[in-house]
Image 1 (cartoon, rainbow, N blue to C red):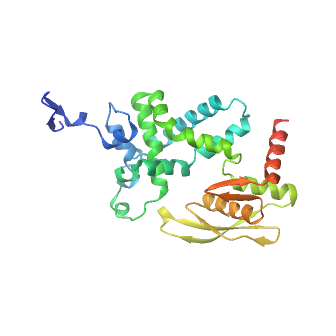
Image 2: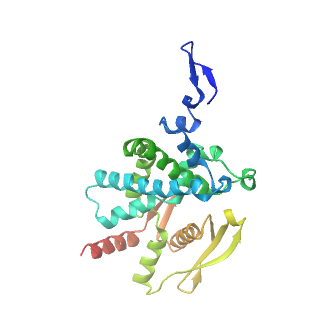
Length: 266
């Protein structure tokens, strides 16, 4: 039985009824607080992987995808299936989940093994996994509506940003689309460097196109590094402009995108 503490003269309250710090972060009060513990338990601290947050991460990813897809469908009735898929891919991503996790401060509540606990900088993937697992915990404890109430304030700004950008930050796709249509080539991505331990490895990737290799870029994964390298190439080619953290496409890329959407619709 948990310890009891006084509650403003109204009698004792069981320790298990006290708010967990994560409940204060999410605004959701759990009936079953053991779900919080499992959502925050990394596999390095679990006696078996099925007791870590990995299964909850799987479920939370699906719930997140459903909430985002429904909201995109409701907010933007003019978007076609292909456009909605691009928005979903931009919002339901490891990078987005990692940003949300770090914004909430979930990393300091993670239950980690000794090998990871003392690290100065934890892998971004841990925060992303914690967000998805926490979504699953809320869903399992209270159903879809509480999970939706937690997620919407976090993802709606990102949905709007993805729609407004017109490119959903998929710079690899934009570069490939341009190079195939105008150069008859496909960009080639090469890993030119790696650093960090296996569980937090970073990659340096360069992209070659039309006989020229553009400056290499680092990323927390090969995919992230490739996206950064593609953006560097687009900027160098004058096909995009970057200002105050936002990226604007040149008329050529915007027109190519419209033509590609039109072809897909036909």
